Length: 241
Image (cartoon, rainbow, N blue to C red; front, side, top):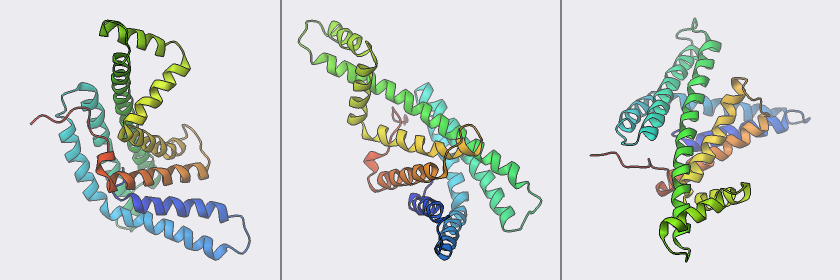
């Protein structure tokens, strides 16, 4: 969700180091600097929230034109929740600089976290849909390579063996993800991002170190997809012209 993944990587790295150094003597100065840097990176990113909100609205409008129902619904809802998240986050920033101190910080932070959580759930739903499609394609491709007579029987034979237990299913899953790195990276990033809102909403409490590590992994994946656009997951079908 972050347009500037390198700043998130720095922020989460500072968060992790702060926790590691928190209980060690003689590290107070380093600890304060790390916490200040983490806070500065978080505050600095808020200056770009308005642009991110506009980008999310435009992305929602584009995804609403996708021909397939599931990607169209999931991505549109995800982008709209993302836009609402940036609205809530901007209000929190306005309160933090003292323009509207009457804004309920706790309430709006929880609303922002909910929007972030719903956006990630929709992204993961779309990832799951895409994964199912890709696994079916992989099963058909592998079945077509067999030497048994008609193709339909080959596919059914291959699929029946794969659905015979957990191990064959995991084999097909790994094979599919290996053949589709953008899907693997997008799913990994969304799963890592999910740890923070789950903890903040009290759905699943997570250790701060785990949240920091997940944030670092997510940011590194974001940097990788920016550096290599071919690794960024595209919708299952192109938007019709």
